[in-house]
Image 1 (cartoon, rainbow, N blue to C red):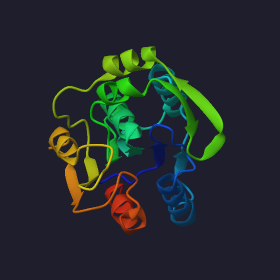
Image 2: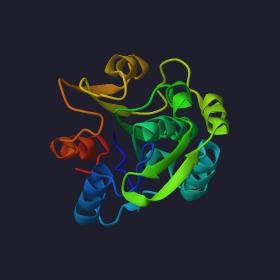
Image 3: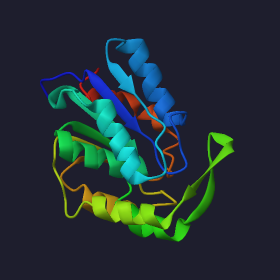
Image 4: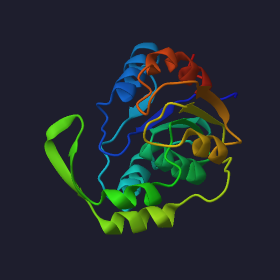
Amino acid sequence: MSDRTTHLLYLHGFRSSPQSTKAQLIQAAVLQRHPEVIWCAPQLPPSPRLAMEQVSGLIAGWPGHSMGVVGSSLGGFYASWVARQTGCRTVLLNPAVDPARDLARHIGKYQLWHHPGESFDFKDEYVDQLKQMRLEGPLSPGPELAIIAKGDEVLDWREMSLRYVSARQIVLPGGDHAISDFDQHLDEVLKFLNLD
């Protein structure tokens, strides 16, 4: 990789937020080590269509060759969508492969993990929006790093590994969906983004 990342986008997962541990660790490292980097970690609306409209507006004008996107779980699915539009480098953290299928049984009202007083409705129409965004077959829109935990209690690590077969993969022998030891992988993420 010849181009250093100048703009970095973080996309959180279902029920999560920019206050997640992974987002906060990346943000702190970027602000401390690379304060010149444009950092963006939006709170995404539950509607996938509106979420991607919001993201598209936020990154309009960003240089595809020197931007990066990090996505966790559902955010990983979104990150792949962004990478297809921009050709940017991508870091996928236990990425959702088929969220339309997986979230179809989760229609209803939910509280946000990091804001227990706030709730949102996940609607049938959002599943349809995810179906329209579905990424078929292995993709290689730009350089990709996938960190996949075999111990993920939410998503099947084998499915993730097959979907991102063209990506550089770090497959953790245990771990969990949240990648609770993410601090141990932070330097590898920053190195992949050509920041360290």
